[in-house]
Amino acid sequence: MEGQDRVSGVPALSVQGLTKRFAQRVAFQDVSFEVGTGEVFGFLGPNGAGKTTMVRTLGTLITPTSGTAVIAGIPLTAENGVEIRRRISIMPESPGLYLRLSVAENLECFAELYETPRPRERIGRALRAVNLTDRANDICGTLSKGLRQRVALARAVLSDPEVLFLDEPTAGLDPVATRDVHDLIDQLRERGVTVFLTTHRLEEAERLCDRVAILNTTLRTVGRPDELRDRLFARRITVRTLAPLSDPFQVFGGLPAVDDWHEDSAGVYVLTVSDPTIAAPAATRALVAADAAVLSVSESHRSLEDVYLELIDSDEARRA
Amino acid sequence: MTLSIRRVRAMFRKELREFRRNKPVVIAMAILPLIFLIQPLVVVFGLPADASSRLSREHLLLYLLGVPALVPALIAAYAVVGEREQGTLEPVLTTPVRREEILLGKALAALVPSAAVAYAVYAFFVAALLLFANPAVASALLQWQPILAQIVFTPLLATWSIWIGMGISAKTNDIRVSQQLALLASLPTVIATSLVAFDVIHPTLGLALGLGAALLLLDTVGWRIVAPLFDREALIIGTR
Image (tube, rainbow over all chains, first blue to last red; front, side):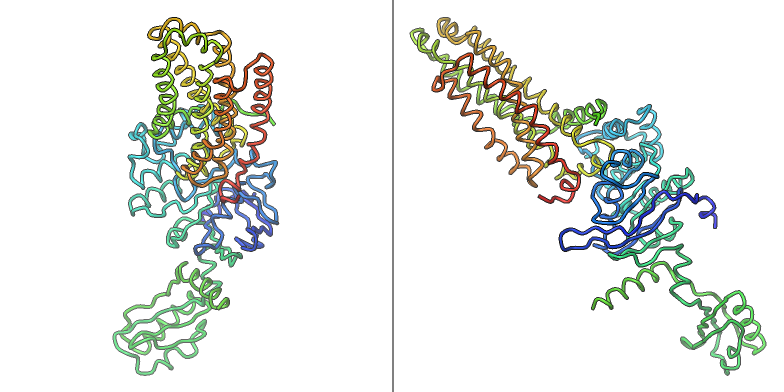
């Protein structure tokens, strides 16, 4: 996979048994994962699953109750807070801009807080990255929500972070603004920046992320979206014919790599297969031999949303 | 621990820009000094020449030390809770800035304009006395001791008010509550300066030196007391 070739073996984030409790309430518990340098890592989970608390913990804003983490090569300790924050950047869910200041003044403040060299040049580059050069002197309070989100993104990339945490970066954005954010994440990926992306948008995670983790207080799974699908669901081939087969048992019975089959509706047959590259040609040959009027033979794709819902639903069923 | 001048300056400049464009803060900075200015001017302008012997025993101008006691407290009370309400605090806390640097930047941004306002009000008051008051009254009021006290005690009182305001601001969730509590907490200072101004507490060199030293000590340790309140987790989660 192209994304995996780009990702270096050195972890940008390494989390071991991390737990955060607020009094009796558990935000997340015993979470372990690694994120490779240059990887775009999706962090998914329902509301209250602990995603934002995890970002804040890894960003040294919140102290973990137990467990360890290494962020951009630095162990997560109170003493290392400044050094870690120097190497990372966090874009919180709410843009948090100074609404009485201009776009440039907001960025100038943060460039100074990060002590970036050549701040004017960096601000210009960050504004170009989010297509806001012509709005530099606008007061942030006059900008639309989408534009504010873009300013927050410019602020997040200003310091050239090694690890960039994006907490719901497209929440509440229209499709065009969402596409712009996705394009920027793609650019960051090409520049080798490690991106830790929390999102509710599963199609966004599927499109952008090399790997995803699903958190529901505990870590439910980690892997590439296609791996997760394969791990959780049997692969299926759907056959559509113009008319119902006269003897489907004869057509599908005993085909190689076909574990099971059933008629879904009139002229629609779903085959559970172990290897679609063997089962699909065999099924096609059998259909032709049976003189069936074949409309299509296609592999059914499960989405990341199916994986997500399966895991979260099973959690809820267990709790109930 | 070494503090970064660049980061302190960044916070300072940002705060000043925000204050300048924040109408409620500008109005608060204007109204309080006006109250302190107009009321005594009206009284003094109406005084006859024979009041000068009584005035020479009092130090009415010290009453204006209420300005550096109250104005910075109002500004400082807005500093943290205002950012929390706007949602701007978390992005700042994600940067390498240390809490002491945030505190110093914000404190300086409250100190500079409020000290400037206090000195300007005082200068205006003195100029008005010289121009419009009865010359005998003006001469009785304008003694070098209260003028020196005003110059020295303005930054000392302002800094103390700022630490009180900042501490309250870091511990509250509502701007109005924070400002009201900060004003309340500054009242003892105003009462003390008023008692000296009206000669209820007789001002002596010893008293002035003692109070000055005490304030200097409080100002120096104040930021060390307030800095731990700027704990990132407490500020973000809102734990008290």
